[in-house]
Length: 314
Image 1: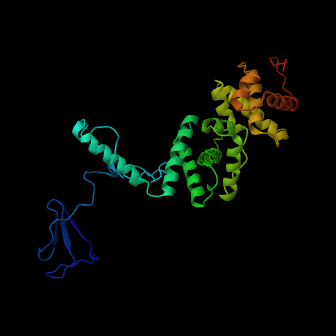
Image 2: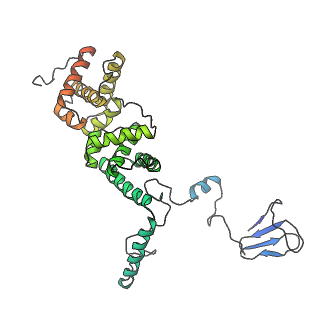
Image 3: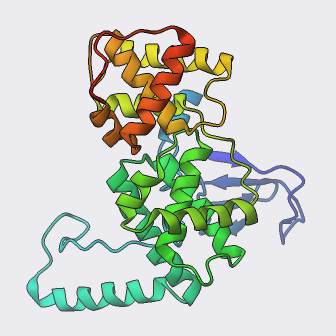
């Protein structure tokens, strides 16, 4: 296979001064087209090792390595040495060589973290992945949280604060940023630190990083709460409809979004004959039964909703 080089190449033939060359990839040679002088006899083919006969095949077979990720302190660009005692062929490594491989792994881990900033990132991102796994947060939101934490490190916002509180605040902010909010109670439970610490760190991050997060809407919690309560799509749609009507009348203005969402679900589940008690909903939403009862009374009064199965005892 041969390929011509354009005339604007700066390389010139040392024999005739020509700038017209042919590259023979089969022999690995660069040859002058005029005089046949071999300019390079060990030319490297920079293209892929596979063939593609159309653009579709080329796109499918293109390989660019593993994607970069912010969930690793080195962005996933460093070499990884597997902890399984198998070689590249899948065969088990002999016992006599395992001590040597163990030492290589140990030093590899040490040189990956070269300074205190990288060590901080390594610990924080491991904590971020652990908390996110407990909460069932998808990878794209984890990436967003990792970016927020990295920005906090760059601006030196973590000094004097615990890594756990900043990580938890980053996760909480990321969830709100992508409009999949989680309650502070849920984040605090998974991170095993107090709501007060997370709230303080969250306010610090939003102020210094200028995140400009919009207020959370009650409808953002409906799917999550209904899923935990095993309620079907009809209840979700009804709850969202109730919230929209209440919003148009200005009933829920200034009220906590989780409490409003919980009350709307209570009303919708009763209307759709999939009754859940205020206690069950309160446990899922992270609010008190009193809050649900107050919001329920306000919404039902203005919307003219009467429930036959309401909990009179409460």
